[in-house]
Amino acid sequence: MPLKVHLGRASFEARKGSHLRMTGLVIVTQDQYRASPEDSLIARYFKPLATDPGAFGLVDDAAVLSSAGDDIVITTDAIVEGVHYLASDPPDTIARKALRVNLSDLAAKGATPAGFVLTLALRAKEDSWLRPFADALGEDAKSFGCPLLGGDTVSTPGPQMISITAFGRVPKGRMVGRTGARPGDRILVTGTIGDAALGLDLLTGGAGVLTVDQVARDHLINRYRVPLPRNALAGTVLAHASAAMDVSDGLAGDLAKLCAASGVSALVEAHRVPLSPPAAAAVSAVGFEKLVSGGDDYEILCAVPQSRCADFTREADLAGVPVTAIGTIIAVQQIPRWTDAEGRDVTLHRLSYSHF
Image (cartoon, rainbow, N blue to C red):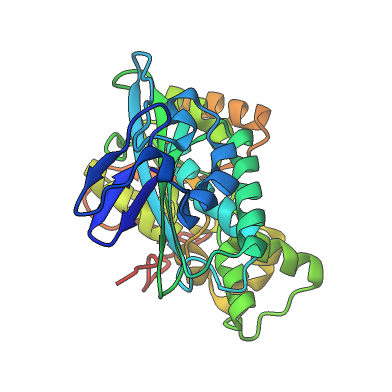
């Protein structure tokens, strides 16, 4: 988030303790500099979040991230109003979702969060929206040990957009990718699947015949609005998983992606997919396919050698994260096969959410 100001065809950048750099036709002296509305917005809402020394208090147009001999893992995700969140969603939940979807990616790579940069495209500068947004973003940045390092703020006439690029650290050469799954590995997934898709349906009226009580409704909507990234399991993934990714577009589709990247397939026992009580009760109304293809779960999906499953499960239990084995990696190259409790094939016509 540089302090950059434009005056017609002229522009300059101000940095603490330095002279003004001038371009264009207009010359402005240091004494004439006044903070622009963008500068004021950054200083008021986001400078307090920039606690890492490498952020330089957001007065520079770059940050320094120390690697300390580790590999730096980089991931980026944008959330767009009307696509990933609703205009009516509370701003604090939007902030948490924007950061947490990136933290989820880091967790699945076995990476420890190191920091993030933020791009914020706003239609208007309103304190009633920015204050709870910034406060929640700061709370999550502190809770997950992932401070703001910089970014950019821009105006837009269209939908709001929040884009975050997050950085994490792993020991050199140890990042857990999608390509390491091997035949015989067990397929494990954290948490529960399908809640977020049902929560979105409840908010948009797409649930149709789905009827739930207020407690279940609140649970499902909160799972859509505020993901639960499994960063507490990053070390466990790093130690035991042969391949991993987070479930963002739908369990069925994301498993197919992991298998394709590893050159293998999978045999999945559909009845073992972990469902919350509200989701289990909704299966007859919305169908199983809806739950495993809807997306926004942000759970960890991983392949773990059989010999390491007990350790993985034990460590997850100590971290308070539920883990379920749902199938096995097999040595063929085809779309994963899903079966029911009697071993009959379960046909899925739609595997995942797609933007296009």
